Amino acid sequence: MTSPPLLRREIGVFDATLMGLGSIVGTGVFVSIGIAASISGPSVIIAVAIGAVVAICNGLNSAQLAANHPVSGGTYEYGYVRLVGH
Image (cartoon, rainbow, N blue to C red; front, side, top):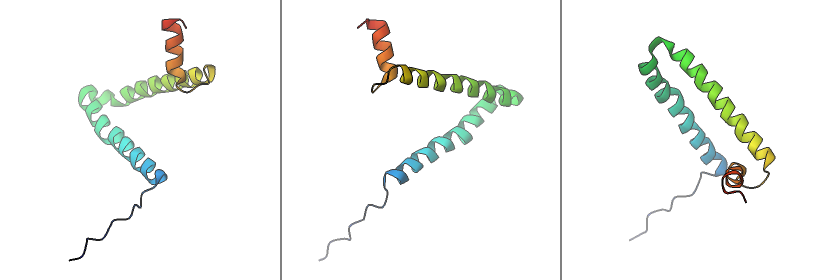
């Protein structure tokens, strides 16, 4: 009796990253737009534009926090310093 052939690992970090990005983009484009269209109807373009503005503000805010607190977990560090006071 012979053992079944072993599968070789073919997916590296780059490939796994692209698979993750593909699933995120696929979900965002196909599922979320469909849900938004069913809720907002013909105003879906305006809803997507508002969402884009909010996402840009969030990204710029996180980038500024990371620049001001150049440690691992800059956003958490900011909240900890401001809320706990250490």
